[in-house]
Each structure stands twice: as C-alpha cells, then as structure tokens.
Image 1 (tube, helix red, strand yellow):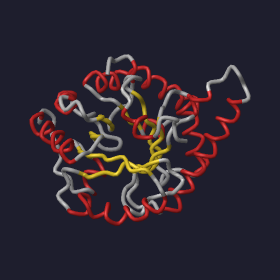
Image 2 (image 1 turned 30 degrees about the vertical axis):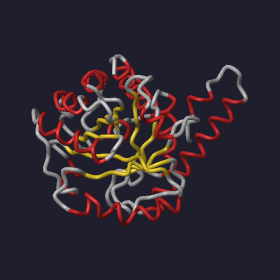
Image 3 (image 1 turned 90 degrees about the horizontal axis):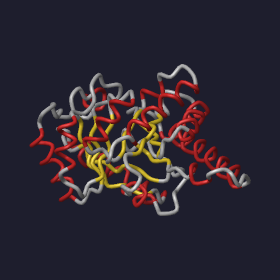
Length: 272
C-alpha cells in the first residue's frame, strides 16, 4: 500500500529514525500464513514488507502472496477509517519485492529493490537478471528502487548462489569504496547483507564506513534477532533494519509480535 509521499521519498525519509522491514519469503509459507505474519508485523511496528528471498520461487506464488498482503492492508485501512480513534496511516505500508531473480515478480507490489549484487563474480547478478526483469517491471508499472547490494561474511545462501566475494569484518576501506561506487552509479540505497539466518550481523564498523557516504540510504539485514543487535546496527548508521528468520521461527503470532516490537524498539532507541 503506497504511502502518500510516494515510495522512494518514503524509503529515503530519515525523519523517522531507523525503521524496520519484515521480510516474507513466499517459498517458505502459504500466502495465508504470510499475510497473517505481515499484518502482525505491521501492527508491531514494521514500516515496510519485503516479499522474496528464495531463489526458485515461481512468480505465481510471489504474486499470490503480494496480492493477499495488499488486500489485507486495504481492509485494515478501511477499518481504521471507520474508527476515529484508529491511525489509518499505520497500515499504509509499502509491499516491496526483494527478488531472487527475474522469475519472482508481481504487478501487485508497490515497488522492487532493483539491485546490483556488487560483489558478485558472475555477470548474471550484476546485470543479467536485471535485463530479464526490466521489461516486465516497465509493463507492470512497478517502481524500481535503485539499490546496490553488498553481501558480507558469512553470506549464507545468497552469498553462495550469487557467487559473492564476501566482505569480511573490518574491511572498512573496501566498504567505503563500494559505497562511493554505488553513489556514483546513481543508486539511492545500499543494502548491507550478512545472509539469511546468519550467525553474525554485519560488522558495525563496516556500516559506519558506508554511512560516511551520506547520500545513501542504508538497509542492513542478516543475523539481527534482538533489540541489542538492532540498536548496534542503527547506532552504526542503518536507516532500515531487515529481519526475516526472526518471523519464520516464531512459534505463534504473539511471539512474532513481541520479537518484532523488541527489534523495532531497539532500532528506534538509536539516533540514526
């Protein structure tokens, strides 16, 4: 559901401090469960929903998940509009594709992280998948968010599939060079990724090295499971924090809501 100020302006706006994104992998859950989790996440403070992750999920499954989440958000907005004590804008949260490739697209999404995997050693993730996907996105009218994507050790599945030359902790000069390169390419966003379910989060000194390039919006994900880890990333300069495994591992909607609330509070306790 697009916010009034438009998607890119909403993403780049720093006046809210460090915000939280919930990543929903449509390949790991039904659209019904994905939608219940997304609504619980937004109710607990998430300000954006990413849909994607798995490398082999077909576009029909991705589309069904995006459509279901959008319809649920519309219902919440309508319900809030009928109640003068409710905050309608709370539910005006964008649903953005976070694709594993050009196969995982949907016209029901508000936008897409149109990414270059900058430290990939294969052409496919530098420009190949993008070439395949661009005509479909143009036809759908899905807004592209120009994003540099940088994978850090341990890297997880994305590092393996993307054939990434992983950035190691402490490689701050390299990260700063990547950030400068992203800016000079015209990217508005730099996504620093430790990998889904990573055992460690992105090194805070590396986030700081990217933050020096102030023109970039920094999204940081991988290995963040609690309020303290969120606070560390936010204090280092993250504008957005992404969690996915945190949601999938929750044993109930109540536990999911509590986990996300904690991470949101950790992120918001910073001065980013």
